[in-house]
Length: 398
Image 1 (cartoon, rainbow, N blue to C red):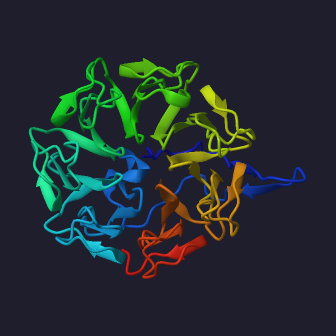
Image 2: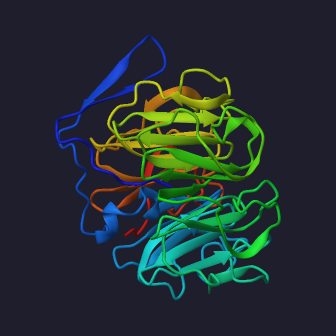
């Protein structure tokens, strides 16, 4: 979901505007560059932030220090990859998977990219989202057919997309709204090329749409257009990429349930699409058909869009979330929605972030992980099924 980038060398003041009374928390970044622990692989500069931790609807997956993958939470469709269909409230290792450089969690499936640039997927295959040519669900990884040169993976509700080293992309799975970007609305159980996309540096899938950042800092989206999630000023769906209006300098993009967000090279953030829960972060609940500035965000390095909430990690290591919060998914100790960013409690050394349906997870610079929000299936990974409005430690990770 997120592409990691360094911030400018000068000290940054990171300001997250909070609700109420005009009160702001101002955070001084003592180290403008996040320095990951050795548990983060050397692919740091070329992979998205969510390549290390990712939230699905009710499960989570992350890459361990040894380049294996751990998943936890709902497992009814085999999306944890441990060979069973049993929910796991603590991390379990994905069977037979090693040398992983990118991982992603979808609604009911998960996928990974290996160092040989091939891909593996596991879980539900109801729409061909495993990319193996068809068949039923698989509780263990299967090879994505014909995919080579892949460097990044991202998943929607029922589709999957991979960015290739040459700047193109391939997608597979559900395509009723054009999520695959291949000028059709026919689902595919094997990868198909995204029409006209070149020079992509980040490719991310929302639940029913997909987006990419190009090397020139512009962005394009395709798929379902309802609520304006494609960012081109309309609400029509598109089977091929359309340029996001007025967005320049983007370095990272992520699609949520029905909204999209991007981080710019200057550390600011823009969001667009559905805003009923304030997930755009501009202080309103008005849907935005084109990018809107997120209220008082500075120094952002990566962004993650969840079902109806959004989270960001800053160069200071602090994190903030906004949008739907009734299930604790904002991580600020409250169970209330916020249309402007609020600080995630106790996180000061965040390096990676991923957002799920109603939860969020982060990897810290020491390699450990924290999650917060809804925990009905154990997706917080702390060994319980207890929902938490503040970050809890993921058990036995890394």
